[in-house]
View 1 (cartoon, rainbow, N blue to C red):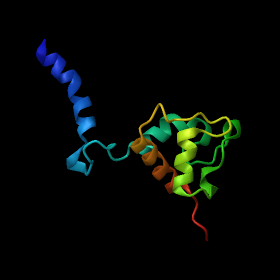
View 2 (tube, rainbow, N blue to C red; view 1 turned 180 degrees about the vertical axis):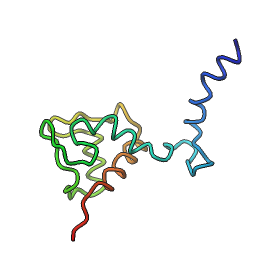
View 3 (cartoon, rainbow, N blue to C red; view 1 turned 120 degrees about the vertical axis):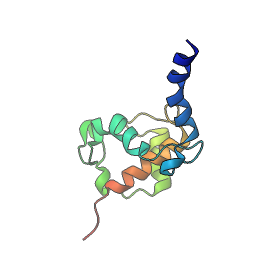
View 4 (spheres, one colour; view 1 turned 90 degrees about the vertical axis):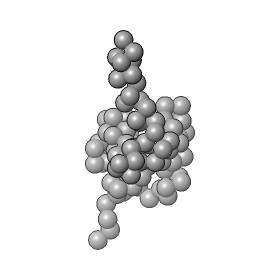
Length: 108
């Protein structure tokens, strides 16, 4: 029985400690978590590439918000977008914003 409990909490411990084998930082989100959270929470309205615009969602590919401004929008919400300050940690919000910044189209 103790082995079953240990196996059940092992993934949570690994997540909390970070994945040092792949460059994760103890206490910080694991690599790729920003994209995973975005795909699970944001892509419904913004689309996986950031350009869907469902329910008035902004086109993230053409956003000109600075990183700090984008963090504030995700944290506090804007318009119909809900605030994520109680659902995500500060580090998770930063990871999502860092992923969103990769969606921006490059000027030609």
